Image 1: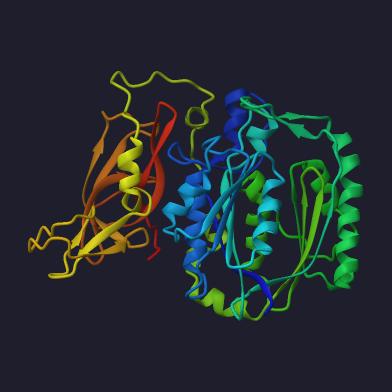
Image 2: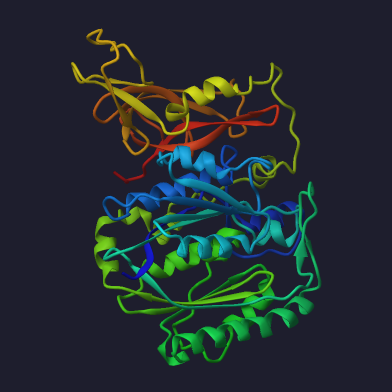
Amino acid sequence: MNSGIVAYGVYLPYWRLARQSIADALEMPASRGTRSVASYDEDTTTMAVEAGRITLAGAPEGTSPAELVLATTAPAYLDKTNAVAVHAALGLERSCSAFDMNGALRSGSAALRYAARAVGPALAVLSDLRNGLPGGADEREGGDGAAAFLFGSGPGVIVEEVAYASATAEFLDRWKLPGEAAAHLWEERFGEYIYLPLAEEAIAAAFKQAGVTTADIDHVVVTGSHTRAVRAVQRSTWIRPGALADDLTGVVGNTGTAHQGIVLASVLDIAAPGAVILAVTLADGAEAAILRVTEAILAYRRRRHPSDTVSAKIAGGRTDLAYARFLTWKDQVRREPPRRPEPAPPAAPPAARHESWKFGFTASRCEVCGTRLVPPGRVCIACGSTDQMTEERLANVPGVVATFSVDRLAFTPNPPMVVAVIDFDGGGRLRCELTDVDPQAVGIGDRVAMTFRKGSTSQGIHNYFWKARPTRGKE
């Protein structure tokens, strides 16, 4: 049976920074558009979880990854596999392996190649935070986000690979030394001079391998680390009118490792069955893949929620993030910490014992009376039955705000803090923080969904758990 992509998903943070606000603050020429910004409680691990959840929700019934690979240039940890936290938060089987591919923008291509060639179903997640010095191009043109692709075989394949070619060369384009906060960039004309022949070589090889011509290409996706080279390829005269996909840098920014996946997903949202896609990625070389959309894409779209499309993710963003708050979240401005003790870091033994709750957000259901316990327990609070429980994963169960409080004294990088009591559909109640929320708009009865976030970092240890956020019309 043919193999290929069976499901995909994109996560874009709620917040956007208008480039005009950077220009106003730093008194420099204005740039148009916005960039996506991860909130203070998000990192590449949490965004990877969200993209993975969307992907698995749309996967063919019974399809579960046997392998997971995470690619990023901004890992939450070094010397520790970040993919295992994603694995735990997605509730994957222990037999599913989990690996990182970190450090370079080309890692995203490597993750996709690895997953596409895996023996069983494999999930490739591309997640990145793009930071730079204030006023620099990386800060202005970068973006944060994640994309995930589940590869498998059978009748559920929605995208088949027709051809793939690569061209690699050693040259100095952009680089960052360990411990540095911002990347260095070489002169742009030099990069363009190197990249263009590599792109032409990879594209020509892919065309020859597939036995197609430029007239057969319905959609062209061009992304990469070098803006000038990407623009040059996008201006190629052989691209048919209307075939070039919007690279989304005007509204999202360049999301680094994740960007090729996000733009490809935006094309898959609209491509017709039988459409042929050329995807070109420039990063320390060039990759060119020719893909064909299958008839299965129609059934796939019917079972996906409309809010999971890339256009819906873009439209759902909030564009009034203040530049000063952005700088704080990106650790470019060091603000006075709260005058209270540091939060205690998570201890390894209890975190390991409660992994299914802390990461997988798994509750328990009493087999005697049907009461759901949140958090899970051995003894039913309703009937007193002991050790007669069935585990239930709550990560994808929506709920409503039963009551809430807006706390203007508690420290948070995004004040004020909103804390709510959530009643889950089907039973169970939890007190937790609301995130990506307008304190003036929250109300009792609001529908919410759970999201994986970073609560705090203490002594170099990230404390991940789940928060609630408004669903904004999604059920």
